[in-house]
Amino acid sequence: MNLRQVFLDTETTGLNPNAGDRIIEIGCVEMLGRRLSGRNLHFYLNPQRASHEDAFKVHGLSDEFLADKPLFAAIADQLLQYLEGAEVIIHNAEFDVGFLDLELDLIARPRFENHVVRITDSLTLAREVFPGKSNSLDALCKRLGVGHSSRTSHGALLDAGLLAEVYLRMTRGQKSLVIDAAERSELEPGLAAIDLRTLELTVVEAHADELAAHAAVLAELDKASGGKTMWRRLPAPA
Image (cartoon, rainbow, N blue to C red):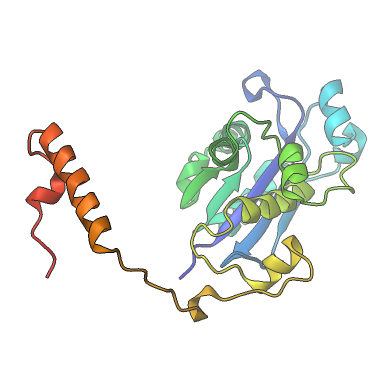
């Protein structure tokens, strides 16, 4: 059974939950078996405080717009029930989880990690895949060909959806050499998907001189290690 994955993003009044900044928007996008299910979750929240000017420039959600939205306490049960049993994937997870932990603490609930199967930071994954490069969500979208022309400002649900597409491309082939037809058609228009399981592999046997050269190299390695090479200790294959 494939693990249920939820891509999560938040927008906030500022950068520091310890200084009183709060969550104003949560977006969740569900994926089952590496396919988007369409069962998403989205909330706007009343943070009970004003957004910083720089934060407003990023998310574009005015204090007036948020004034009649529910408090986090009112949606907490629905959110946690939705996330139960899921791997939650967040870009720069430390930031979002810090805010979620604050909100949960304010209503006397356990920390966020206690409500999900695990938390995966896609920023950490991106740094492993693209070391030394910019790995912001915008940079990844551009690098991986994920369309985000409609992204005039940051929105939690939109960003969660973009992250899901980015994640699919970053992990393509991670679990299987077979790329599903829908994913391949998006990446390489006009090319038909090929199921590698239908192909027969040709086995090329080594010649006698190649086997002798290989044995000589192994002998040199064994001598250099003082006879400690592992293949000398293992039983010969039947």
